[in-house]
Amino acid sequence: MKDSQIVMKILSHSEHSVNPSDASVVSLSNDADPRNVSLNGVKRIDLHFPKFTDGRAYSQAFLLRRRLNFQGEIRATGDVLIDQLVAMSRTGFDVAVLRDGLDATAAQLQFDRFPAFYQGSAVDTQPLFAKAVV
Image (cartoon, rainbow, N blue to C red):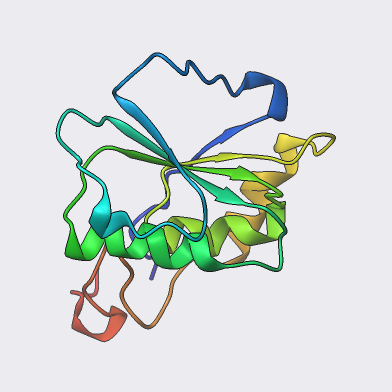
C-alpha cells in the first residue's frame, strides 16, 4: 500500500530567486517565531537551514501548516541535502532548494525508498492503519 504520493518541487541552487521588494514572499531565519509574522497576503515563506544539522526550520514548517493553517508555499533554503527531502515534505515543505553543487536528479530516488509511513504527517494527518486498503 502506498502513502499518498509525495509531491515536492526540487530546485537547484541557481533556479531559486529572491525579490526583496515582493511583499508576498517572506524569508524567516530559523530562530524566528512564525506566530509573530503576519501572514496576510503572503504566498511563499522561505525557511532557512544554515547547516544541515540545524533542524529548527522543520518545526517552523510544521507550525505554519498545522497550527497557523498556512496554505501557501513553504520553501526550504540553505544547506539542503537530498537525504532531508522526505522529512521536509512530511513537515510541510512544498519546495526545496538544494545546496549549491547537488544534482536534483537523485532526489526522486529518496522518495521512492519510502513509499508509506505508519504515522500521519503535517500535510496528511491520517495514520496508515486508518486508511482504506485499496
